[in-house]
Length: 284
Ligand SMILES: NC(=O)c1ccc[n+]([C@@H]2O[C@H](COP(=O)([O-])OP(=O)(O)OC[C@H]3O[C@@H](n4cnc5c(N)ncnc54)[C@H](OP(=O)(O)O)[C@@H]3O)[C@@H](O)[C@H]2O)c1
Image (tube, rainbow, N blue to C red; front, top):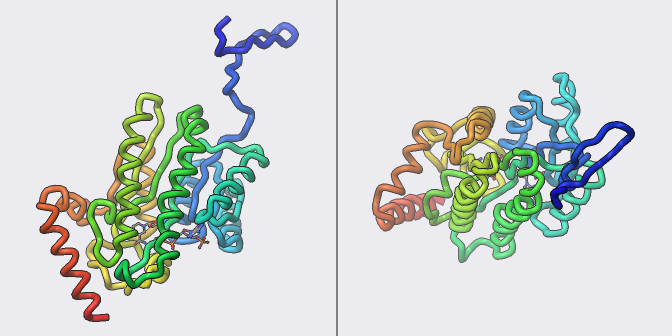
């Protein structure tokens, strides 16, 4: 008998069971589901019949979304409130899933934020919190759940940004954090392709959500020709993810915005982006 299999005999039924097989219920975990793109992704995944667990810090918003989805006739998603900026918050989320008998087959790493301003002027703790949420928590959840995602031949959808394709004076830590997400996602896409696991980076341009408020960014800071609604971003993200795309950039102008920095000299791109930021800074 293969050492990787356990032979199980019950009355007259004989079958092999992998020790890795599990009685835990597979679910799709969406982080940052209390607003914006995460909430839109929750609608999208639910419309396609996935069992959901929603997480973010604000339980009332998560519960309101879960109720709204249930009212549409879907199974009510479970809600687990957690602050993912802390290692303990991520640990508590993982423990809560385990205690509820759930395991992640699809992970949507969407929670994230950015801050507009010069690195030297912005608060150091807040800037480190961007890295804690956008990168540390995303990586921690990814590494924790790769085994169950792989076992279920599920996937990981990481919400990055077009910011991940260019350095960003005026939002330096945010751009760098999203470049990390794009890079990690592309590498994992290749590593896990042979296992039948989908790994995708969703890279939106500007989306009208609570993001701008938290970033301290005026609504007209980015060209409106790039803007897309959260529901459209979620729809294109879901379709691209499920069809095995490595990168999804919603909207033609945003695709051009991610292509140009790869074609033009880096110094030129940086000089242009710094000029834009200097102009905005002067305007206040
Ligand atoms: N809006 C845009 O223009 C845009 C463009 C490109 C990419 N993105 C990316 O899209 C993702 C979603 O952003 P959004 O536009 O939908 O903004 P949003 O409306 O502000 O949503 C951010 C979500 O992240 C959650 N979150 C924030 N801090 C958290 C923490 N410490 N622990 C757990 N959850 C936390 C928020 O919930 P709580 O406050 O309840 O915790 C909220 O659900 C982000 O990764 C963002 O970088 C946004």
